[in-house]
Image (tube, rainbow, N blue to C red; front, side, top):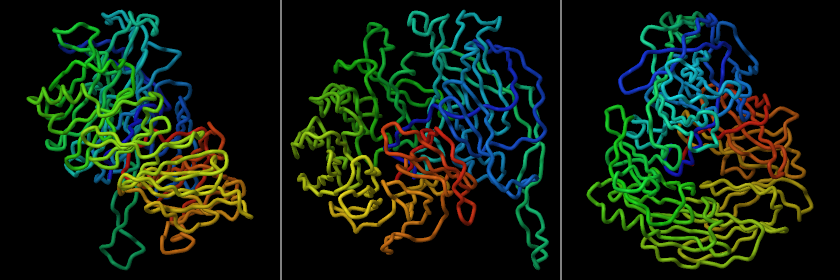
Amino acid sequence: MIRSNYLFAFNKLLLLAAISFSLAGCGEPGLISDSDTIDTTITPDYVEPVEAFNIDSNDLTVIEVTNPLLPNPRTVPLLTRLISNKTQLTILDTDLSADRENENFPDDRGTIPEFIIYLDPGNAGKLYMLDLTSRREQVIFDLAANTNAIGDQIFCQIEASHILDSDAILQDQFEPKQEFKILASTADVDCSDLGQMNYFRFDILPTESDQYTVQQPVEVEVPDPDSSDPDATKIAFELQNISYSLYEAKRETVSESLFLQSDLIADISNNSYALLNYSESDSVLTSPSTLAYDLQQPIDSDNTNTFQLWEHTSTNNISLNADFQVLNPYPNGSDDFVILHGDKLVRLSQSIMFDKIQDSARINALANPIYTWTNPADADISKLNILSNETILVLDGNDLKQIATDGTVTLIRTLANVEERALVKSDADALLLETNASKVSFLLINTGSGGLTNIVGQTESLQTFDNQDIFDYRQLDSMVDQRIARTQSSGTASPEIHDSAWLPIKNYLTDTTEMHLLHSSNTAGGILRSASIYKYDAMESTGQGELKGALELEYEIAKVIDAAIINERFGMIWATKTFEEGAPVYGYYFNPSDEQWSVSLSTTPASSDWLPFIEP
């Protein structure tokens, strides 16, 4: 289920298409319309919606998925480069979770975004949009248009505007989506000159009369000639004409704060959401440089436009550019919100956060952090773990500390001075990964006391997974050089599973994380070569349950970065080939609908940053 702890990295992605055009529109009261004229370039007759892709920084490659039911069957995946050398590729996933019940092929996109917004460094005055279902590129705003009353000439920064899926939150799910809007800053000629900066929200709207039509495969029910039942049917694809709109963007001025520190949180009691911000105050009663916290809530029925519920001046002397993150944006039950802000932890109950009349309690909570790091460099999400609403663990220098609800701090253990350490998150325990040149240690923290369990292995090849209580590593002090996978419970490690590594796969069709194992007969150096994929079975000594598939012979896996089943025909594994710091991440595609997954189509570099969070 998609819920709390999501580390949302939803911007920076996706794709461009085959044929480009520009787009126009009329003005609207209160908005500035600078769109250029429509380019009448003809869209190809037959277009497949994008289902799978690989991202390489500012390029996007579509994986044309295997599908024997298409009018022109494709039995092997192919690559199509759709975007090259663009910048700030920004996802807009606008469909609601209820839309996933729609079996219509072009419309049922699930977690695949519908649109990509991006900039072209060779034409910095235009804002581009790609419709991923029709693969048509549009210029939705042109600063060079004659109607530009502002005088700005270049786009500087663009960002998505995030909201929560209103259907999902009714099902107790935290599923961020994007509005059909984009935030953008512009300048006259120099984006580094703050005096030239302008900040806008661009509403993206379909033009009233301009549409185009493409042929696309649509699922239909047809008689099944292979069945003895005269009423039997089967699913087939037929080509139908699908109409799409052209779009234009209209802009309005917004606060600079929307580009700085703003986090999406769930208003559980009202089945809604809010935006917690840290910015320069908008109040007429304060100076322009006064920093303040404020909360924005939806004002209209479609949960888009917001109003300010409250604003309080900050007294913590935290800079505007300091890290700002709500660590549990969807709290469990009645748990409090915990905010990491600069080198401080701030705690607010849900009632204090959303009850407008509790100004005094809210001001007090914001002004009195429950913890301030003595070593500010350690004020990082990797150095803390929320065990429960009553207990938070932090790593501050060499000190591991426990923080109670009232801010009482207890020293759990002072660690040895080691090269690297981080809290590996667990649902019930906190595991401290302590590393040096010769060994790896897990420090189990439970009920306020710490016990040390050593696991001998090579630091560079140790792999852990937050909230999974699993780990794998390369053991060098044995007679056999291989990869070993294990689980742990309450500080006790399970027996070794040899020649194996863990492969947790996020399944967006079921909103769960499914445990798998990679197994290879050759894991020298900790690298898995030509690995097979098994469903994990805890009852088997090898951990090997159902055989799901295999990687092609030449593929080598060192560290698994991520893995996901994104829709019925799109699965990916992201992994490195070596344990070196900064090693490139490769993307490996497979079709989850295949009886046996054939993991192939290695592309690099690749990224899974766009995937929404799924609770382990």
